[in-house]
Image (cartoon, rainbow, N blue to C red; front, top):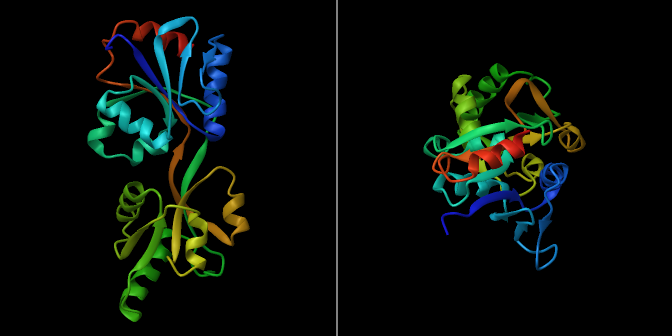
Length: 228
């Protein structure tokens, strides 16, 4: 069983489409026996390789525990994961697709707030005058917390978002958000704007390898083929 090389590919969305294009360009035909909903695939030319379609976040976790040898996912998801997970994964190639930026966004009506320093002031006002913490809705609590603390913003509370984060400030669930955006159009359409110095992280799709798998038979050859 250990001789099989497991490759994780995002199970949906634009990322899946773009990653499949890499295989297509290498003339590697992916075969799913149970049709388009099949979560497993094989490659005709490479019988010792198994493809598993997973959520992009899960790919990071599976690379860390060694149940995936190679995985395609977003750089943002790697950097959001725990340090002990990041240490077990190597980024082999960054692609020019899946590009997006994690940003701090605030409601348009906050006209006096343009920078992180202004945000820090508002956070203290919330604490002193309203006796409550500034709430930040996000799917990236680790990166968000780290960024705000590094900029001197300490009076805030993170709210985990599981859906459309852009709605949180307008439903009373948070005051501001951090979110991943590629064009900024969704934020604009939802009356939000990015702080002038509110860029947390630039991300893109990456090919990653589990450090537990680097000595596996045939993996070097396969990585060379995929990264050409």
